[in-house]
View 1: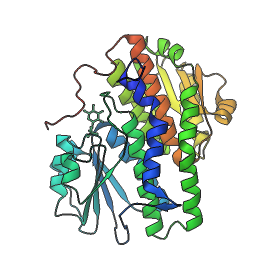
View 2: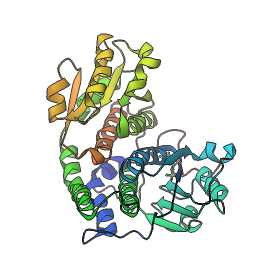
View 3: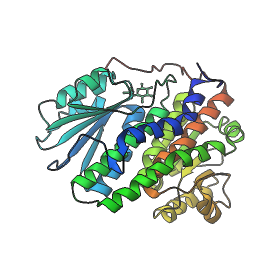
Length: 358
Ligand code: BG6
């Protein structure tokens, strides 16, 4: 069942290039998006989910807003419903769930029913309650995910959400055929980039040292901020080490007080338009003797890697897709740190794969 891997989590991390290519084949045909939605007239998207799926929504917010100019609100399901948020009849609500059975997300969906123009869900289990109760359920085609800590479902959720954001951009007149073709070609390159990323990196050695830490911080800016949150969640779930994700620019507004030589700070920073800002936040950490692990591409590592405790070099990726690619080092760090700690990687204590109570 584990196909020669020691854990389902390792198998599911390794499967990502293949399942992501499957999802792309399903939704992209002959340079066209095969998505039965039309965003014309939709003036707002409310996205709701729990845990890792909620971070997929946070990344998608950057895409919908930047590519399609469509305002997006993201909320965790357990807060959404009880806040009694007003929802407009010209908006859509979008629910993301691997299992499709998460009680909080299902309750949020039921709250949104009749209040919005359309309920869309992005799920891995097409027969699930959330899929059945939606106007439209889009499968992520990740295949069965056994490891409690979500990995391949996350990157497949991101892929389907990226395609939806492109569809919204086309429908709203923000993206012409050439622009779409370019983004689709970039997406098609992603499985290859993922294979490359999965092949490199000294993860076991880095993890040996991370396993000694009491607290670990993850920093990211822009669409890399939700990946920092996901990196921290994954590490917490799997290794039981306290970890927090922060927007890099927010560091100086509080968390910098935590920094000393014992605190590893993992900086997720592709060499994009925000890189210099993130590097200056990173230097604030180094000035306080924080141990920085910089995750960037070759150019970023060459420009800013000196003085870092460690670096991990990712393949160069189109800016738009970097968050999908950088999910991989986040997963691998959590996995290898859990191995170094000797925890139950596939079944972390106190967690369940599908949480059907509110
Ligand atoms: C949690 C799982 O309890 O539920 C997480 O441990 C998951 O990995 C979250 O992200 C949401 O689950 P689902 O099935 O709604 O995506």
